[in-house]
Image (cartoon, rainbow, N blue to C red; front, side):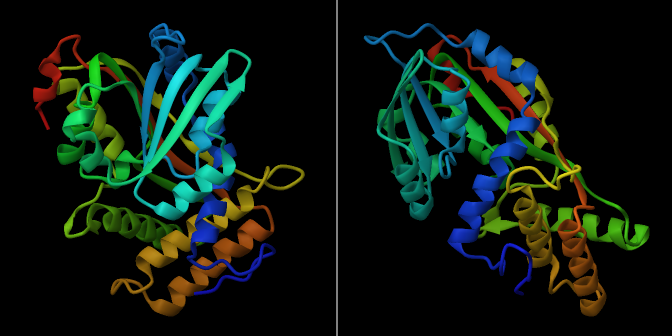
Amino acid sequence: MTVPTQFGPLTPTIDSFIRYLEAKRTVDDRALNAFVWQTLANELPAATAERPLRVLEVGAGIGTMVERLVDQQMFGHTEYTALDENPLLIAEFLRRLPSRIQRGKSDICLESFVGDALSFTTRAENKCAWDLLIAHAFLDLVDLPTAVPDLLTCLKPGGLFYFSIVFDGATILQPEIDPIFDTHIEHLYHLAMDRRLNQGQPSGNSRSGRHLLSNLQQMDGILLAAGASDWVVYGGPNGYPADEAFFLHFIIHTIYTALRDHPELDPDRFSNWIAERHAQIDSGKLIFVAHQLDILGQVPKSPAHDKVAGF
């Protein structure tokens, strides 16, 4: 499907995905939970040029989290490793960011790798290696019981984990078109998340936030802060902020891609519904809300955390 909009054809290319990640930056900036963010700032260990903070971000994409951390002066002396399995996203990361950023109190040395997060973090040389693990808009795309215990083994004793924008079961589109049909589409969209596979293995679900929160509580770690980080996008007097109209078009197209061949949906009725949602964006009328969670925690202050279980 090609969706004609004021931004041109929206097709599932790497360029449109990179533009989506760029457009998502301002949406995420508003959404990130301020209490969790401030708690992270308060809990970070002291760092010096001789003993810099070591940070690993999995699913780093094009580097918007690094940009945000620099803008907010979160870090001082830091060695920051960015990991993503998509080489084209890492190429964009390298295009956007230098290998060293010095701004205000920040002195951040950056390196990036292409690779699978679980394979990377479970290598012997990466065990107990980092002070902070960041996974932003990532953990609702993996199988939590498999991924999280392995990811946490890369942290030093007492290391911190910051898991942000983890989807948790609500996709709201207003104004309504047909309340019953709208609800049915939301249900099927979430069900598609629940059934999603990656290389034959489970790949996240529509209630990842609550599952992550409850299961972390059962593990040998410490929950330091948690809170909602909902996306809320709406048009004001001057339309949508920044490039957020494109963000919305991409979301609607994602719903279309997930459900376009679904046997429970009449193809023409569904296509008309999608077209109307795009038209609502073009007129500045669509309101979009997605419920998500941010979670900050700490692994035990002993090497035993590599035996963490509980999922």
